[in-house]
Length: 158
Image 1: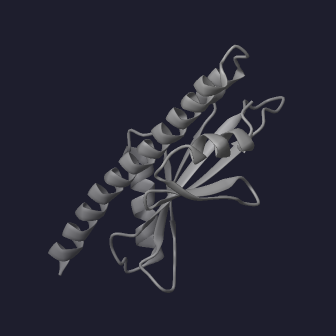
Image 2: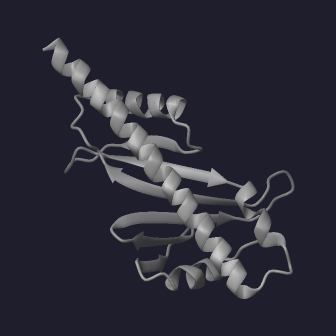
């Protein structure tokens, strides 16, 4: 099982990572300008250990209703080829935001091996985290495609 202190140590060695801090549920950090929330869940009797990476993205469109934005998130969840899930969060001061969450347990199997050196463990951990973040960004790209179709349909109705 991976420990949060190992995650923090590994991420602190990446130049583009900043504002690394503990939260009530894990850690948060910025990679370049992308905010990332990371949680690690211990293995339980019926559930494997899990890692969860979430990224938030400002909505690329001002929707007429939260229902429309939620519908976009549902379409993305059904059509994306990534393992990510998307939700919409309303905000009074902006167009709202889409939270893209990536949860996986199979990616942690490599950390159970006792024969990994500390450097190998750190490198595998960074690779896992950044791969999951890339999947989140790919899901956001899918979201943009769905939003563009929605905007085109809304404009053709007017």
